[in-house]
Amino acid sequence: MLRATNTGVTAIIDPRGRVVARLPQFTEGILTGEVQGYIGASPYVKLGNTPIVLACVVLLGALVFTRRRVGRVGESR
Image 1: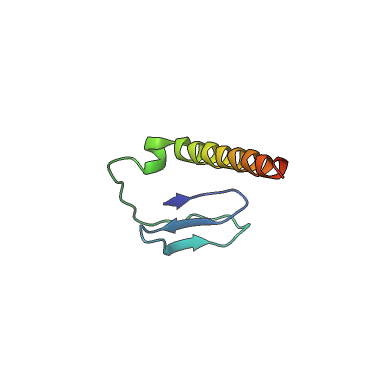
Image 2: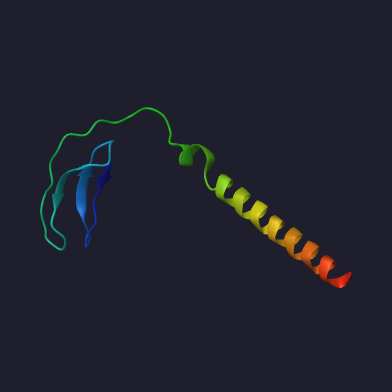
């Protein structure tokens, strides 16, 4: 992963998450290193926000179902 910013951290991070090279914050400079591109798409590129949206809908549905069910139990007393 390559990360380049104007005011933050500029770094090269390997596939295992280790920082290979970086520049200090808020300094101008040139960072050089070797990178290799990969073929294919990440799960997020393939699926987008769909899994998160579905999880939120399921959780909200479960909350509504639970609230209605608890309300009915309280009314029957």
